[in-house]
Image 1 (cartoon, rainbow, N blue to C red):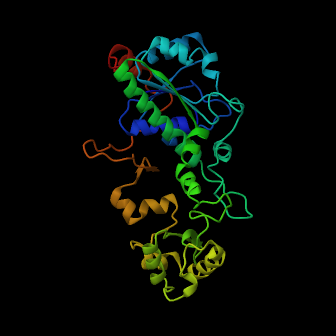
Image 2 (cartoon, rainbow, N blue to C red; image 1 turned 60 degrees about the horizontal axis):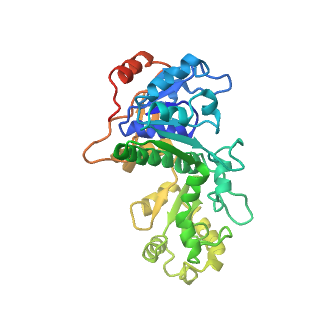
Image 3 (cartoon, rainbow, N blue to C red; image 1 turned 120 degrees about the horizontal axis):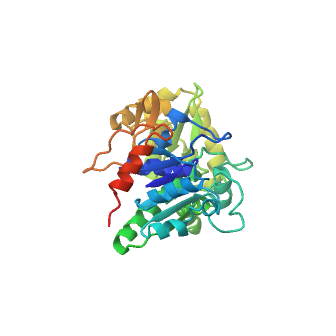
Length: 362
């Protein structure tokens, strides 16, 4: 895999593939751009990759990248539409050099459409796609989520799946292709479950009136110590267990969990109840039961939770907290996350490896 250095979802996609065992080479500038956010040795998205530094604005640099293109299965780039073409590294040029290449393009708006050339970020893309709509309560603006729903969920993951599918097709047919992975496409596709609920009459277009954004039994609450918990007792049997464990099994007000007219009042009752005890108290009472409960943890807290420790979900490499590779495989257990390379650290090794001992399969 050849990755043209960028920000956000493109590098995350490359990291995911490197975690899964791909040989990912990231092509970086010789020096960081003046306005770039250079994370250096804590650029976790570069872990497990090899780095080469190239001046892609020079004719020599372009030819250097094309030499690498000849020997790779896939390329990842996250520039605005047209930028790679102006550099002389667009898909037509690259596919001419390597007809089996899968050319992955990561953007927010996509390669065509009225907004294709406009600037934007995760929040804008999921706002337009409909994925942000339910992230709030009536009368409030939607909550701004971290860059997970768009950049990672609707972007990186869809690009990774597209690249792997394209590589399978190329190995079967000998023909590569372009993968247009747009965050507006992927995040819209992620709403399929919500659209199914909407079509069945179980999801309203009004915030706070649907199964997954309105009920008292599917929400987060603040505790006496200021920390938060979550409950998600959607099915009747789980709701019954929650009521029993928190002492509300005899209160008739809670008998019909699906009566949306009562939800605002019941949310207030739940809020008062959960605010009466600490998060640890509620954990002792509810964690590990079928009440569908979990504490709301920071990443550092999550890393120390017994369940997460047992599964080794987090790790520390050189003092930096990182999430371990996922998913897991029975026959090929993942290695620990690879090291984060220095800019241009592998120039000589990559060119010797890829161009002298090509890893490209025929």
